[in-house]
Image (cartoon, rainbow, N blue to C red; front, top):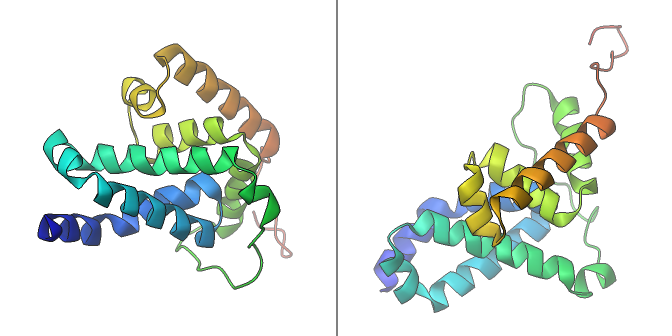
Length: 166
């Protein structure tokens, strides 16, 4: 049991961490979410290993941990942002990436989860509905609302830098 779990986790932690970061917008919270998801996955490993699609099981566990955290008051009481320098993710357009992350952070948790699962994890509507435990229509409406909100939050044109270049 431990060998299969260890192999799975060691190969999937970077991917789970990226998904968690996109959900919560903070590397420290992302690490906590991944740890929570891995712990839950370990306690149910016999069921997860028999499910056949471990990536989906792990992703759903991570999203459920994120949504559960959003419902608790702990998040409102403890704010860990800004204490350490966050690790940077290689990106050709850092300003646009920062703008997108800030806009994602302003979305409600379920809309953020829908956008991350649809566009980052590249899941079809039916799979997102299964992961979030809702109907496909709800996924479509949440995605549409989230995209509309992102359009309002993000600049339509790239902002020019000091030299006047976009």
